[in-house]
Amino acid sequence: SSATAPIRATLFPGDGIGPEIAESVKQVFREAEVPIEWEEHYVGGQIDPRTQSFLTWESLESVRRNKVGLKGPMATPIGKGHRSLNLTLRKELNLYANVRPCYSLPGYKTRYDDVNLITIRENTEGEYSGLEHQVVRGVVESIKIITRQASLRVAEYAFHYAKAHGRERVSAIHKANIMQKTDGLFLKCCREVAEKYPEIQYEEVVIDNCCMMLVKNPALFDVLVMPNLYGDIISDLCAGLIGGLGLTPSCNIGEGGIALAEAVHGSAPDIAGKNLANPTALLLSAVTMLRHLELHDKAERIQNAILNTIAEGKYRTADLGGKSSTTDFTQAIIDHL
Ligand code: NAD
Image 1 (cartoon, rainbow, N blue to C red):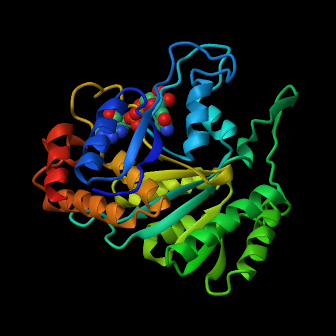
Image 2 (image 1 turned 60 degrees about the vertical axis):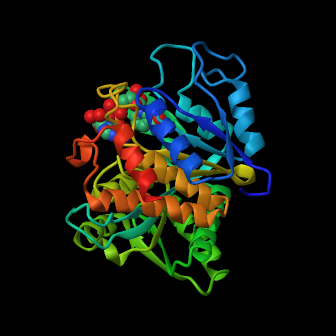
Image 3 (image 1 turned 180 degrees about the vertical axis):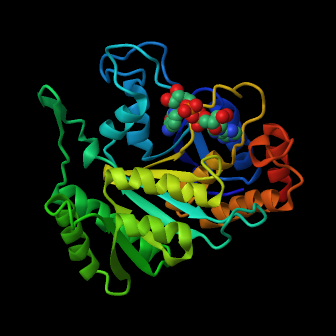
């Protein structure tokens, strides 16, 4: 019913349960009349020499052109001579920040009912630079790279995000007391950016203390920004606070304003093709994509339908202790729109 031209977005349904949960997203978006036209791309059956990966050059170009996309789980085939699919996407699209909103789902009981935080993980360097070698027998070395450029970029994104989403505080998570040079530089960059955002409170929390505080009282946190490895661990810890990886969305932010949303779980080969998968994480990831596009009304409407369906408790997939199929659960969400 909208008069404006549809927005083109790349969709990677992915492997295993990917196509089933992607179908669920397509259906819900259609019923909610979201003005998006999907450009579907599948992982290829052979290596594309231009990307050295099972992802084709055309797939990467599609994301670069559309600047927005949604990705299902991908299972990297075992074998030599190619790059991991997720690594290819991260490197080629320069996906520098991984953003994971994490909030308690009303009606789905966990130990906490007041979690409402965002983790923002630096996604390109730190301990994940892939620089490891043996110095002499029995001694190996792994190089942690922290650069001013990447630290400023992710800090800038965190403060920008906090301001745009009406958040009050950004906490930089670190271990600068031990990693004085690397985490020290990361903190210095966060401080510099913080000065440009006087309306946002800024604090620094040591990672070990942060873990203790998160499990004792997650409501203490608002937006957390951190280097790669800490972000990898803390973001999964936070997912656990609200019920697990089947529920948590994420969005990768790349150079030039690219946003590639993705569910954080894998392809779940054990239940693939059985109409059992929970599409919530991919649906909520699609919602973060809508928010990135500033389609806030549609985002709100779909998010509420998902949350209300889960809260009502009548239709839930097996991972949440229910008996519903993927398609029945999806239909229930559509009925709640
Ligand atoms: P997994 O997340 O696929 O599965 C772990 C467990 O969680 C399984 O029991 C699975 O059935 C369950 N599960 C996961 N998502 C679910 C959902 N939406 N609904 C219901 N149950 C769900 O992890 P894994 O088994 O370690 O990995 C399987 C494959 O996925 C591997 O090839 C791995 O490389 C790939 N993987 C991809 C990504 C990604 O693309 N981002 C992430 C993790 C793993």
